[in-house]
Amino acid sequence: MKKRNLIGALLCSVCLITGSAMPVMADSVKVVTLGADLSQEQKDTMMRYFKVNSNEVQILTITNQDERDHLSSYVPLEQIGTRTVSCAYVKPTQSGGIKVRTANLNWVTGNMIATTLSTSGVKNCEVVAACPFEVSGTGALTGIQMAYESASGEKLDETKKQLATEEFVVTGNLAEQVGQNDATTVINQAKMQIIQNNIQDADEIYNIVINIAQQNNVTVDTEQLDKIVSLLEEIAQQNYNYDDVKDTLEHVDENVSGETTDEGETGLEGEGDEDSIVSGLDESILGSDVIASSTEDPSLEQETGGQTDMPATEPEGEEPQTELGEEGIPEAEPSEVGELQPAETEGTLNTDSLTEEDKALFDKAKTFCAGEFQGDEASLKTAAGEDAVVSVVLDEETGKKLADKVLSDYLEILTAGTDAYVPGDLDIYMTPELNMLNKEMTKLFTIEGAVPDGTDGDILVNVSQEDKDTLYSDTMSFFEKLYGEVTESYGEEGAADTGSEDVPQE
Image 1 (tube, rainbow, N blue to C red):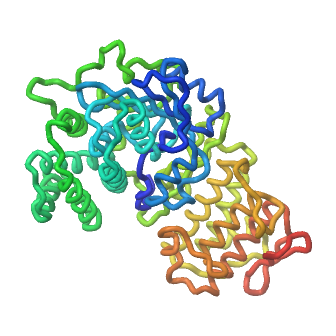
Image 2: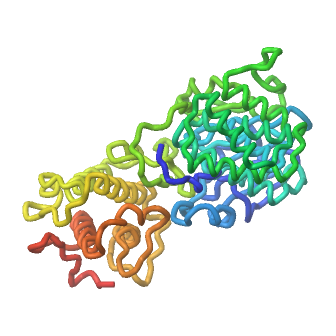
Image 3: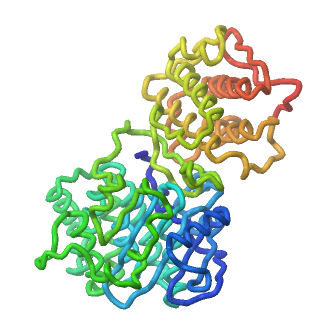
């Protein structure tokens, strides 16, 4: 999985965020949220999966603007994206804690949602978070909170909702290093001790986190430790009643630690309840290769490939990426714009949802990046022509990071398509893909004072602006040639001509 301080990662994907939610009929007890950017056929698929009709539940339509309104304080707008596709089904209950089932979410687990939702003030409810195709799940929490408020008629405390968001981010960041279960174990157990014993002293909280990490053989670096302690200090100040969160936190602990209660129980009551939404689903609707998780069946993650106890074996320092979804093609399993997708390195970027034509374009870009940024002159000549030379020599780490970033940006564009593209006054190309990529490259290489997003600026922090200009020119020249907008000609120093009589200059 990728690393970018997922402080964005926050919240799992289920197109759930709040906002211009539009109620449709209501039972006022159960609420379904549907992503506005799903096709009608996909929305119908999710309703069949939930086994409900529109006249049986309240339906909230969640838009990308809803996501932006609630996530922009935590996540760059570029990462929130432009589309919202995931869904949720929420039913408040009278007892039993928080039960969660997920489907097609590859970054978020049911246990992560359950323990985090308890921080927002929810005591008892059932939640199904899902999508018709695989997505990361980083948008779910806010939407679930919204659905819960609508279904229960209870307004959650704003401070606790913000803390829940922060907890989700901190857990996600830690999961990037140690795995989902270990990250959930450390934060959930620490939260249990602090709330149960009303501990507010920062030093005590620090020692609790250290001890829990050691007891579970989890290595937490200093930066993550500070964030966890800061989060728990804020949680401690809210004076939670342990009886309100006991069922959920202890059950999550059983699931992620593998330990059961004295009675040997492995789940909360209600799995066999005919009216339970976490068990009353039509599993056949989403197909047989669904990644799933459940607080009521911990083995489900292992059985469906959704469990990632160990962090992904990818180099440090990579940039996160948002996988973009394509409307109307569930079988292609696109990812959802608006969901932070764990980052992937060059060579492991998922191109399964691309057409053969787009895969061919991406492979050519990969060859170019290996040559231009990583110094493989043979690859550069293959991609850009025999006259091409490596014009800027980068160190190995910088070259790899830069190649990963450019490929990630390009893959996002290919995966999402150009449906959401809005022409701008400063666009200089005829091809939408080129204008979309140029916008990202201008920021990455800080052209004309543009500022990179988040930590992207760290990639080229030790590269001069002159070299950045050259790299930008070479990169866009390659892509111009790839899309047939201009004939590339490398000069004596390898810089490419990005101009053409047919292409106005910015």
